[in-house]
Image (tube, rainbow, N blue to C red; front, side, top):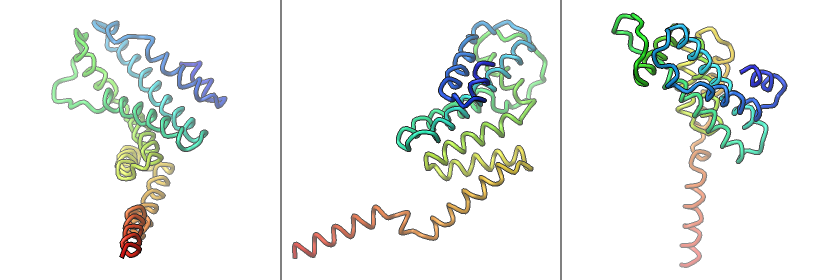
Length: 200
């Protein structure tokens, strides 16, 4: 984990991404069965940090290469943030929070969500990074939803607010100019009309 952080600080994003992947893979889930709540909480924190930093490295890599190659990195960033939100997202806490060591992988996954639910700051980062990846992939509606979710968790965050407003402004400009939204369709129609006129 420290190697990945060091790589991230010095701008070696590809090496950082690999280091975060390795740190996450170093402890298989099955080794956490029958472990204490403290050990599971430490693993959950490590996994959350690894996936968040992996998403960040992928975003930085995508921004540093040509647009076509960047798409692959943005998809990886989206996948890392998505996995984090699925594995550690809010658990419905209808049952009492009595701890019993997990005996199976499904019990462990429930426990991961429970111990992760206590600190929601990571969720704002995960939504923000997934939103950033989706925005770069041109999934504007999905990015907007992620930014709004992040802002709901961290209402005073200036960076999230700035990104959300910028995306909304871009969306409004596009909505006001349907010819840009439908440029390809309009061009094909124009070409077909020209062909018909030339044939007639």
